Image 1 (cartoon, helix red, strand yellow):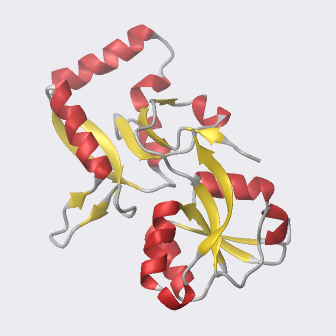
Image 2 (cartoon, one colour):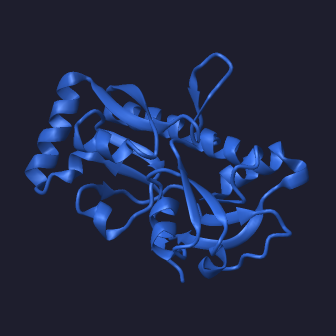
Length: 215
């Protein structure tokens, strides 16, 4: 089954408000403060990661700076994880989020999504010898996900009850769990799987099936 979504979306905390007037007030507040607070990932290269000098870098960071520049305000980069990024919007710790944030009806009730700026698929990956081609094949297997991600939500719904879904607080913890053999499979995006393949060449994960395709 295909789930079409804007996976890499610019998500406006301001647009959780219901009226055009409220949106305008939110933008006015940003201009008055002279700064826009944008949540970005710090564990998801190439979109957001920490360099050797402990500075944020990546595509999402570049887009955040571009948005602030076009708005004529300073940018305050706020590192977020999958589990807290929506909460940061709802509690006004950020004004915007730039993230690989899957769109579904529940999320659209509380936040608005922009058009995506990059294609991105959520999939299940594992070693070539493991026979998995759909959700039913996850029965009896251990699969890891980053908590609060679209992969977490979709696998919770689709995996058999005998599947052991282990949830990790961020992608770095998920990668470590796979490389140390704590999990057999990972539910994640293409880029995380690519990073895993570089780290564990002898046990690299290959695509098993796509959970969801970006629109």
